[in-house]
Amino acid sequence: MTQEEKRLRGFAVFIIQWLDQTGQSNTFTREVTDLVLNYGYTVEDAKARAKEIEDWRKKVLGEN
Image (cartoon, rainbow, N blue to C red; front, top):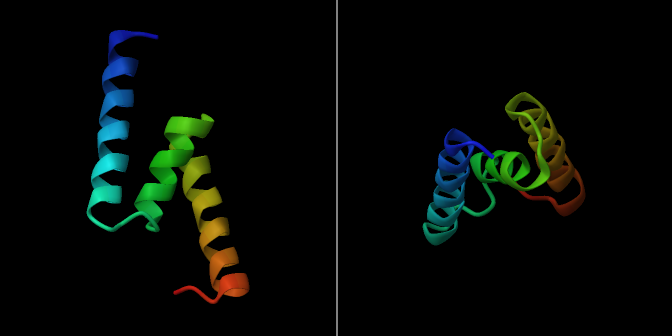
């Protein structure tokens, strides 16, 4: 892992922690960041997958 990759990974971890601490754990941004950081998605693929998850939550769980 290059220094740049380590720096970006650290930034992504910071974003996730901040979102969690500020009550934004169930947000689109949190989901995209998690998919990129922990599951190796590209940003574009993560956005598409996060949209699928959001749509599923609305349909099945009745979340807004």
